Image (cartoon, rainbow, N blue to C red; front, top):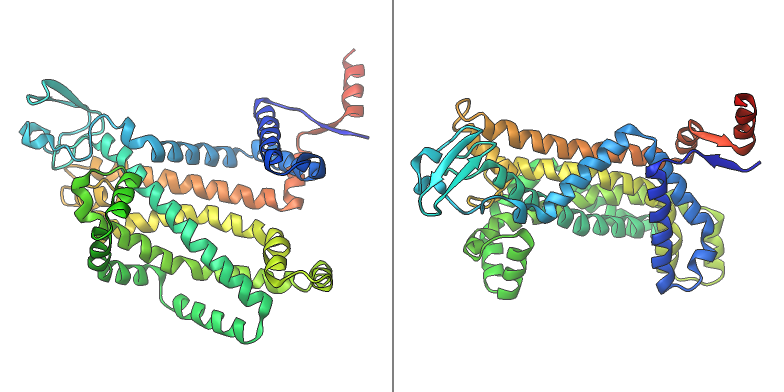
Length: 385
């Protein structure tokens, strides 16, 4: 009996995405779609399960909104982050939400929908520009920190013995320090060294400024921003090394690994083409949850004065500045805090849903809630007739 699903709009979008992805891969690998029909079907069922998880859909929506504003936020901001209306019109100083301020130099009226900070800057524009800062930092930390942890975990788990002992003892040394304390210490000592390094490499400096959507005048503040990124990369890899190592220890005992060794495959081929694909599920869930953790830690470091410095827009820095004027300027704390909370919530909801979807038993239980067989549909049709 062939099982069918009641398809909604999201399911049709899922079908289109899976087919499009398969066609794209097929461009580089001939006959990939024919050889991997079962894999494409698995992807389709995973997306169906996601479509039937309300928390997951809320998480996807919040994450997509964050990514959109992380990419286009600085361009969508009504005013530049480095424009200080206070020097044009003093009434812009800590202007409450809904205030309109006339700017003589621009011969226009600035509408402060979410209020202004102590420089008179539009808070909405700062939040949009700050989305780029948080987005880039989270991507860089995950892209650089996670692969390092996975690589060391694979090596330690696969080779074992003295290699395992060496890697794990180094990992334990990093895990012995609380991540936030270690990040604070590194963020405090690295800025001057990083600033000197990036100032001597003009092309790298221009790239970093472009990446964060910053003006050339902020080149002198990049050291503090990059120190936070490097500090978080250093404290982020150990957890992934331990998770990957534990999964590798279990997976390398399976028969398919013994078979791969028997036919003469290299250790690196076995690790990356056979073991890693079979343990990547829990790691992907952990990565998704960690995006929210990275954003929270970055905001926390900026709140402590260790991250981006004005005029660079940063959510944590906005909250820090707002504490000096609370409760008078409550909007400088409430709105940025709400944004950080929603972004972290989105990543956590998505991570929890991915954990359910990547677990075959849990995913099947979600699918069975909406599944109908052709025979059942025919029976219902006969009863209705």
